[in-house]
Amino acid sequence: PAPTRSAPADPVSWLRHWNGSATPPPAIADAPVVYVSLAEARAYCEWAGARLPHSWEWQYAAQGADGRLYPWGNNKSATGALPVLHSGRANPGPPLVGAHSPAGDSPFGVADLVGTVWQYTDEFHDEHTRAVILRGGSNYRPAGSRWYFPNRPELNTHNKYFLFSDSYERAGTIGLRCLVDAED
Image 1 (cartoon, rainbow, N blue to C red):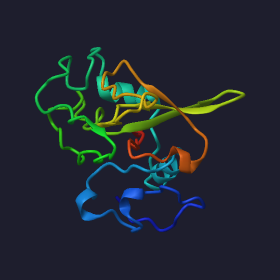
Image 2: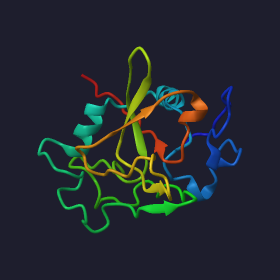
Image 3: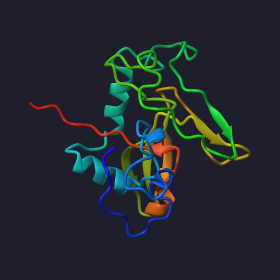
């Protein structure tokens, strides 16, 4: 990831795993970026000349056109495709980018779509709430937490994450994937 040049107005949990540095520690330099809000994820993608994917774009990149249940096919237990799931009181963090490639890749060769971190896609709102659709599932679920949604690597599932403020949205299990539109 690129070094950060600024900090948000509300820095609570912002890039928490970077320990106050402008760059990630070497041990996690190749891990998915987490502890960012939806707005921060959008801003990063815009800075990189990209955007967050719509849920349907994420789905197509993960599944292709053949209806598979996982990016790599229909066998959840395919060797090396899915990260190890963790539960406990401390999040070990997501595996490094590409750690389960090519075994876990989609038909288009896209890696790390499921089981590493939940990924921001579409935002929606009504007169009372704002939420974002999260896709892909995380490799961590807190021990004893009944409310925290479980890892769902199946491509026919998603989760809805309520949006309140940047500091509330930052989590060690939610990250981003930027998409660049193809030229016509």
